[in-house]
Length: 616
Image 1 (cartoon, rainbow, N blue to C red):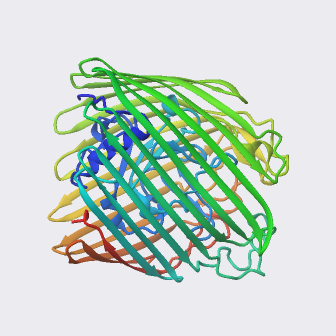
Image 2: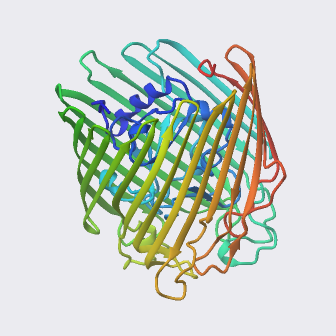
Image 3: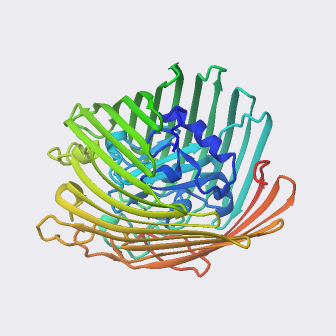
């Protein structure tokens, strides 16, 4: 393994991902940057990783990030009533605030509740997603207990020339979605500008007849809960002959969501993320990267036409990373991160600002068939003091692409402002930060026509934050999560098969009345199979997803039944650069819930017309 000294920190990583995307979409070992904050191949990663490319997105035809990621190893979602409604991701059974999400290297997620708004991320603006499972606090700081997901927005190419793109989708529930973009570049520069919009009449978010007040559903609102979104994305960069590089990106998403609620039933939202980085080589063996970014979100809430309140949060970020080649196949990374959080609301928060400074070091090396990765970090949080985290990983490469890996890591998560003070100055200001320890063992093999991987892990979390029966946040003294993930990919006679299986045991171990219960909204078993084939200009495919039983509450009084869905899809390249796509979702019209008393879409059909010079 020869470590690259490409810029590894945050936004500069985008270019490594771009280089990987210019190859075959089915490349077995693409370049990734999220696992170590440096550019490595997926085969060199000593953690469980999944890479989703733009070609995968167009093949799978998802309407949302939830559509795209559901059923991947360790990934499950809870959705409150269909597209555009509140969506939470659970990675490896950890809390929905335990997954760090980056967009082009910039941390996102509400400062109030700690959750990234997956439902507000336009899938048509996404070029690539990297999912890294397992603790990463020793590199990224707070929140990375379950793992890190990095989303790269669409970008320009250095191949030169002007490259437009266009798509329009229509379908069930009066869905209409459109996207148009313009990108280009030269030997030194690249740029992209893309705009999109979407509207759907939606479904009735709450199941009619729900009487439970905690669900927020009322029988006097059996209406369609509509969702609209407008979004704009821009990025670009310039690379000088001496290797110095300047890049920047910006994404803004404006949404309007209707839902069923007691004090409010409509929200207007703003989600915005922006960042820039500059990297250069002071010495041949030393690359340094400076980056800055900002994430902000705002929710204006209404009851019908009456304004009832707002929440505004902002996170400013800065990073300085240094990659030093200390010897052949040995890379030392030193860096410092800073972030400042601010929240403003009609709610009376007892505190509205805090900051965190983290310093970290990482050592990566290859000795013959052995790989070693060591990292350590110290964070100082202005509210919760100092936190030390670390990780160690080892891998051994056998013949025929077989790899054995083992790792151990610690992580932490600070309570959010909502955990501490919401609503109206209550919350639980006595909450303590959550701390975790994880161990993992993995075995994988990558060959020309097929690949497979099995990972088994255990995570123990102390002071886990959960909601009691009155929806009051509390520290569960302990939780233990065990899991096994398997994946298999085969390319045979033109058929492309990808299968995923997750077995999960997320248990509460607080020693009280809920001891031994399953943590809420985590299915204990999930499986997904994608099967695709091209016949000349025609493409066909199917996805089958199954989820086992879960529970909606800590006391396990409200079970959510297991279910399965089947999606069918087809595409036709009827002219150069032009393609028509169709997708039949939930073919058998299965009724299921991922949040108690909240509906999910039934059988749906969608039709897309796409112009994309890069798809053939």
